[in-house]
Image 1 (cartoon, rainbow, N blue to C red):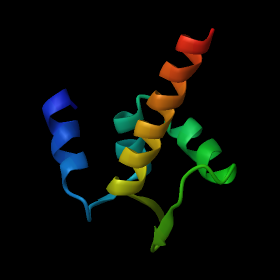
Image 2 (image 1 turned 90 degrees about the vertical axis):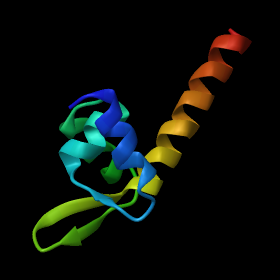
Image 3 (image 1 turned 135 degrees about the vertical axis):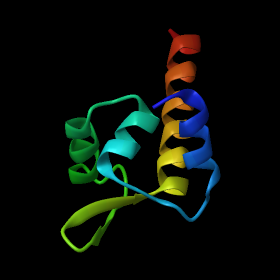
Image 4 (image 1 turned 45 degrees about the vertical axis):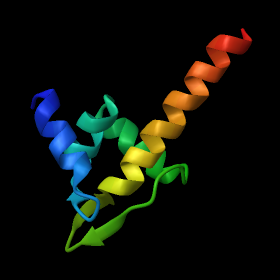
Length: 76
């Protein structure tokens, strides 16, 4: 999956993402996405037996994480 595809996924505000799509957008593993939802860091919903994530929620989490990371580098 290339960068253009990830941006297209994120631009659709009402799109649901699978665990794999959310992981690729965040640049982490599927297991880490599961860890994040178990820790209450990101919201999810079930569609049948599949975990689904709001593209808006994932983008918001990604922005917040990048903001925290850049703040910690500045204050270090």
